[in-house]
Image (cartoon, rainbow, N blue to C red; front, side, top):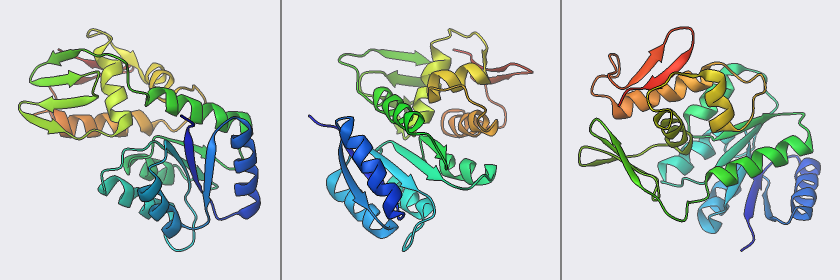
Length: 226
């Protein structure tokens, strides 16, 4: 089945160029020129990935992203932004974006980010259930439960949890986590990992301020104590 991409971008020339190049790569592409249309089409067509500009007419990208996640759509979202403000990137990630590219960007970089997101969100053919503390991770279904309650994790939060779990208690640097979970090692915002760790602690720890499992390793990164 052809992978479907929804591009929400109000710059007609950029949208046209993206559509042409993505279709050359074999993707089926639909364009939405404003936030309201993008939100409606995302709900209707359920694309495999959404490329979302932040500066949009009707509804801005933040609002679109918030509405998508509130509606339970876990579709991977790659945000496009001309903004250089770290706070905007952090805000997008906290709202549920999976990755971002800052304009101007290279086509090869964009394609690589899209491919990485698609790989990370392809369900495995079989899975296993693993545990630590009162948390259970169904790797096949990508479902996390704490006690008897299912915990709603964003895609990146889930991938980060697994990256820590698979180290068997060893410390993992922020750079290593960035490479494994986000798929690249460029000079990205340093707060990305910390923001997602804070969310994991909030959702999975008894007391997020005094975590017993998702631990900080000073001057290194993080580790998961099983």
